[in-house]
Amino acid sequence: MSLRGTVQKVTHTSQATYDRRRAGYRARPRLGAVVLALGVLLALIAVLVVAIAGRSGGSVEDARAAADSALERVEELTARVESLATDLGAATAALDEAEKSDRSLAAQLDNTSARLDKAIERLRKRAGAAGAAVESAAADSSSALAGVDAAARSLNVLQERYDYHLRRYHGGG
Image (cartoon, rainbow, N blue to C red; front, side, top):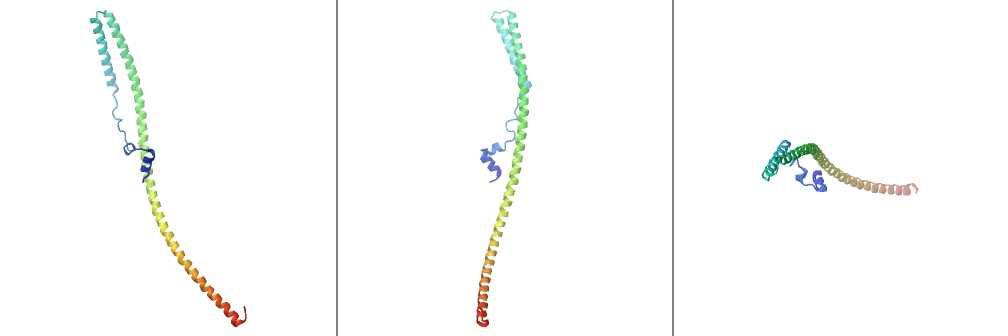
């Protein structure tokens, strides 16, 4: 199993999530379109308020006051939308930086995983070669031990014969 597979298994991360590259972050609202739509909507509301006030028998000044109030709200909402757009821009920049960092980390992890996989494969090959060398050395040492054992027996036999001849022919013992 590769290091990538191990990381995915340990972190319970799916392949799709592991390989995600900016998925779903491309569709960002346009600030101008939002402000324009909000302005048109509030202007329409102001016109409707004036029209309703005019039909209901209210004074024109009441309608103008309602329209002015609506326009003030439009300005307040426009300022709020701009503030939110600024916050969205900052959040988008932070998200882009996080995505960049995520891609960099994923690339580093892939690179490290590949290097570790190669190192493990080399280690396995070297361990196999070392195992064969150990088996060969064990066979050689076993053969050498058998030769040493045979030489020791032969030397023992020669020593016994030498001692025998010393005792028998030279009176020693």
